[in-house]
Image 1 (tube, helix red, strand yellow):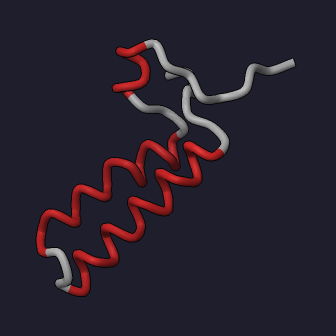
Image 2 (image 1 turned 135 degrees about the vertical axis):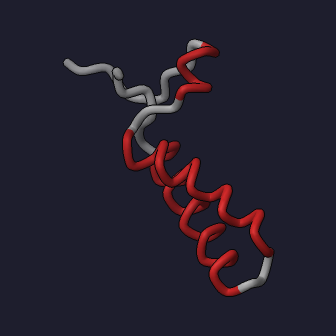
Image 3 (image 1 turned 30 degrees about the vertical axis):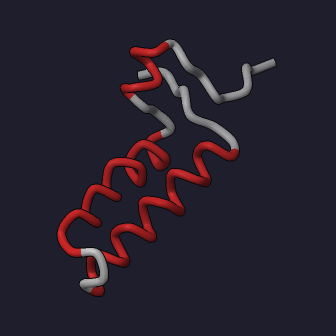
Length: 63
């Protein structure tokens, strides 16, 4: 599993995922908020299977 998520993409995924989960816990948006687990996990693990299938890589190359 090569890392393909980096920078702003990673931060955005973690923030969006955490906000969705928080809204689900408070009952604001219902059970659909638990979908926030997906962006949170992809942000924390630095890997997105969809990006892999589409050939997208937002991580800076190592020098």
